[in-house]
Length: 168
Image 1 (cartoon, one colour):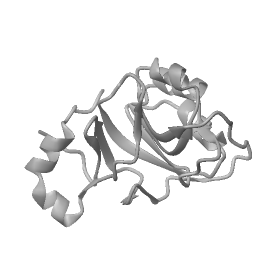
Image 2 (image 1 turned 180 degrees about the horizontal axis):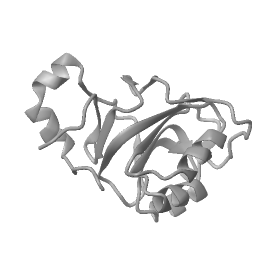
Image 3 (image 1 turned 45 degrees about the horizontal axis):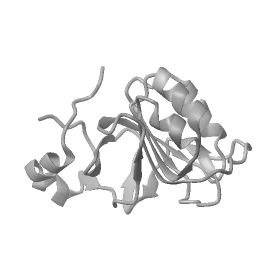
Image 4 (image 1 turned 180 degrees about the vertical axis):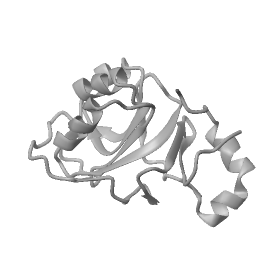
């Protein structure tokens, strides 16, 4: 079941108390928008890797159940840690979206997929395949600390992270 599609600006306007308490945070506007689904939301799964995409691929091979994979790739600009094949698989497995604090490749292929993808930039070089990284850990990206199991809401205005699922 897809989560509610909430407009991020409206969520911010309606919940100043959550912003003040830190229960609702906006990521810094550093991400480019990819994929056909510009508006998406869901529970967060966190992953921390550096120039290695083995764990990214492993997660996206699982059933997504409307979740959002948030990958802290250390903001590396030296290679892509996500490409077209895993994004296609994520779409087929029911992931709502993928946030990558790093680079992606196969942009045209990703833009053809019905999934939300945010990344810093495209890069033609592929990542290492050592399988090194940490799953389900607290990560820091775009000025925000993000925890596994929190909720993410993304649209063309930006990305919000909430401690709990938001309702209208």
